[in-house]
Length: 69
Image 1 (cartoon, rainbow, N blue to C red):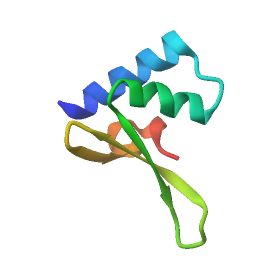
Image 2: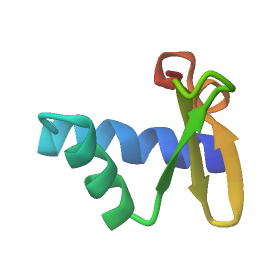
Image 3: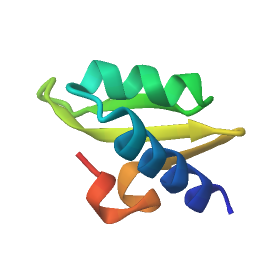
């Protein structure tokens, strides 16, 4: 299941690379073919993130509740 694959990739990145900021995290996920797409609300503020992987596009909360914005 794609959700579980994204979560496993996320867990490996957090455990092995320990990104110090959001840019490092995004870069590490992209190296594993997971694209991070920021969700911006109508006020122009960051609302959350979407994860694109193997043709699927999921909200962070759909992957795991703690992975939402």
